Length: 262
Image (cartoon, rainbow, N blue to C red; front, side):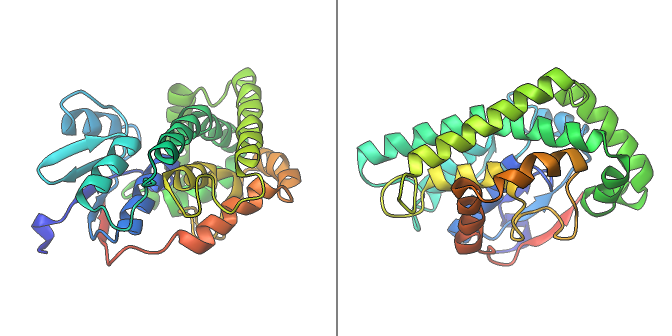
C-alpha cells in the first residue's frame, strides 16, 4: 500500500491510551503512519480531525473515517481486520471483555496518568531527562523548555500539582490492581483462554506503573522518585508481573511503520 493510502494514527508517544491503539494496530499487523503533535496543541489537532467531537488523542484515520478514542479505534480495527481477533467469539465472554475494557479505561487510565505526571512534576531532574527522549520535535531539542512547558500543561490539564488528587489516584491505581488480580484468579488471561481486548487494555493502561521494556517509555528512563517509591512494593504482586508478561508475550511489533512525524 502506498504511503498516501496508509492508515494514520495521531498519537502522543508516551500516552498509555495511544499505546492501547498502537498495540491493537500491531496485533492486527496493520502498517500505518504516525503523527505526534506537540502535547497541548494536540487538543486543537484532535478537535480539527474529529470536527469537535474529540479533543484528545489517539485519533485514527482509516477507511475514509477519523476515529477518536482508543475504544472506538479498537472496535473499528476489529471490524476491518477481524483476524486475529481481540473480541471473544462467545457472546457472554465478549460482554465481559468489553466490561473490563470499560473499567480499566475509566477507573485506571486517568488516575495512573495523573499520578505519574504529578510525581514527575516533583522531580525536575528526571522530568528534564524524560523530555530529552520522549518529547516530539521541536521540543525534544530543548529539553529544559520542554520540561517547563510539560509541567505547566500537565498541571493545568491533569491537576498534576494537586496532592489530594494524587492521593486519590494512588487509591484508584491500587484498586485497579486489586481488580485485575481478582479477575485473573489463577488463569493466564482475563477472559477465556486467549488474549483479548480485556488483557490488552489492562496491560497498556498499567504500563506507566510497570514500565515493561516493550512499552513506549525509553528503557533507560528512570521513573520519578515519588512514583518509584509507590511502585517498588508492588513489583512482587501477581498483577504487576502479569502486565510485564503480557507485554513480553504479546506486544509484537507491527509491520514496518512509516516514521513518526510531528
